[in-house]
Image 1 (cartoon, one colour):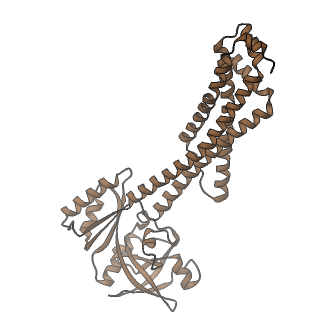
Image 2 (cartoon, helix red, strand yellow):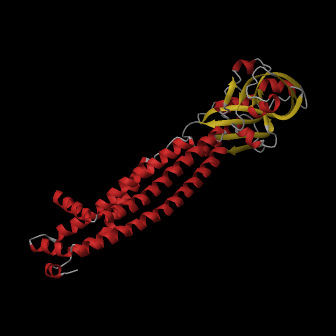
Image 3 (spheres, helix red, strand yellow):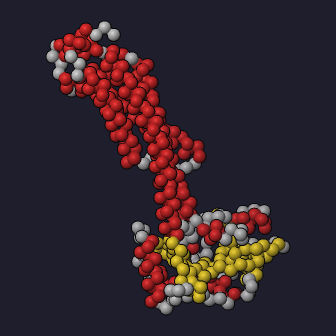
Length: 390
């Protein structure tokens, strides 16, 4: 068997420029498919991380009648729920450094960053002690800090919240990144968020129910299953199902992921066309090789080479071309992805299974397009091949 591969290698080496050009075309086609696969996966992962940072990884539970602390405890007790947090949203006017700013006062619990994924830039988040003691503290978003004080870190500065039904004198204990929470995105008409212990805001406004409960699902829990469990639990707790609204944010993410997969698949198919074109290059090269080696084939058959030996030798040549092109293409594509990720600051992602499939398909392509020339060479009659003068 080693003689077959050696003969195929020697044959390819006789026309080195043609072999290099053919391998290059295969490598370019393979690299393009690899690039599309990796970019698609990196894009999907980046969108997923962004959605998670916005809090789109669970359910939003709300009721036109308001939700109680007992409802919150019931939701938290479910095995399908990893974490749940009350949200009390109130429009307000923030007075700071002589200016007045329209804001959304968001009453939250401790550990809010685990549910709505706030990105803390300075100071600290709200603690259990803050919530339990109705502390007069808050976390503001960076945009408000810059507009009021012209800097990002305003920890320790005072801020007054004027609600429709009350007033809160607060001290800033933390600054979060603007837009790092889903809440900021769904309240885009009011650009500033001020996060306050929900107990403090309830006492100031006199409203002792929650507008929403933000739920983060337990790992590998289907959102539909969690939604049904929450509805059952809240109904058992006395909540009216007619007033209840569950917004399935996780399913929205799943639909977006599916769309990204479809786009990636379509782009991969387009890239596959270039790989298919390189297959025709293999066909052309192998047909030329059969034509050039006709007398050699006749001599080999005359001294005892079998039909299978000739067939295997030419298939080995086609396979070598596709093997060299596949290896070069995968290395080239992965290298380009790595360089681009380092340049743009994205974590590189190399889908090993998909790359293995691309490698196998490239080899299969070489065999398929090399089959006809190999069959043609194996079918030559020794007498006709020896007479050939071309």
